[in-house]
Image (cartoon, rainbow, N blue to C red):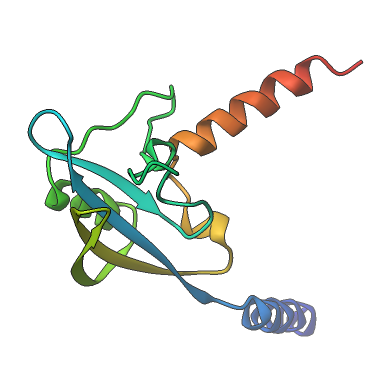
Length: 142
């Protein structure tokens, strides 16, 4: 019985060693809003273009809750607190200019075995729209 338990434990340890962890990054970008005060904040995981053809930040990269409502962050620090709460680690901050607009960029990272694991608990507007499209298309299959 001990040999069986020991063999199972050894097998589990060996399998966990092969589950390769790598580092995933997210760039949180904030740009002053056109009309009004505050920042428009988006989250760039490198999967979609973060800027539109008109030079503005893509709203599809905003975070939403489970019902699809956009989560409005009051500042870059508010967005950073959200990322830390989800297990991401702050790495660095820098600023840039795109189409004459000042952009704050904060980079976070998280070690995980897949992009899905890294983004667990995080939902962008694009992710939500895709999930709804899949949800409705699956329900109409014959």
